[in-house]
Image (cartoon, rainbow, N blue to C red; front, side, top):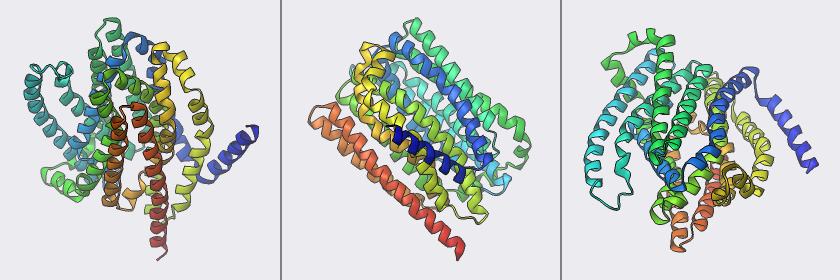
Length: 439
């Protein structure tokens, strides 16, 4: 074990010195520090949440969050991913304005649909109490969409401190209201309203920051320019949005399958396992993604090769995470039993099955910008559609055996295979990009 630790330490030092410029390191540290504080608060609150709410409550929250996350993609059309790309500020700000307008229209239409659906569900005994919180979905979609759009805008100008603070505000607000709801015995309603209020506060903060630093850019906005910018990057709703829908639906499939076939209690156990593990993974992966998307894009635009950087980034992340992930896998049930209580030991079993997939997510997600730089969004979309189909097959196999362990294990195994394929594809694309620079 000592030899493995020493090897990983030496590899980490060598790779870090080779690929990380001082400025990039500083940006990552800023994002991880602010985001780390934002994520530390709900992590510290998890033992209380686990004792204030039941697995059924967590199951309903998981369903709400996954529905909102899926609808946000439709609301923005994934145009927010294009905000970093334009060379001109006028194009970027019109893209921001256009995406916000599209999100407003989508959310308004969604509110009308939800009103009608809520009335129908109220009289349906099999509606799983969805009518209690379905009215909150459009509002949550709107504010989360605004947050995503303006966070990309802030990332364009390296406003990492404010990006981190916005996440901190969301974390504090969400946690306070969830704990308050638990003390007041509000059930799933307390968890869901806490999540909504967190989205509202963070969206308002990042809006204030954007206006403070870049309000002058609003002079560039016009109806004609908004339409032009949306048309210029129309490949994002055509390909990137569909790809994101497939990818998000793939990640949400366990919640939907477990909710429908095995009930809210099992869904809640899965949601708790996913929360415990996905918080640190998402924190690291998204922070690295945001920084390296900008840095590698900038480097490529200056005519510099990027393939070696892509490979070394992946090796560095893998070496960093290998031992922590192994330890969590071995002691997962002890960890959940100690932190959450005996009622949540089942979440530890589920966590053990998820760890191989989560390891690959942590390593590969920071490199997800490569197809965007290479303009291979259509190919990425097709791969994710195949990924979705494989995951449906994996989860349904467990349903056929009436065993949710099989569903989760096969879901995780499928993720490892597909993300491994993605890594080699990213390397292939980056080498092709380097080849174009030499021609």
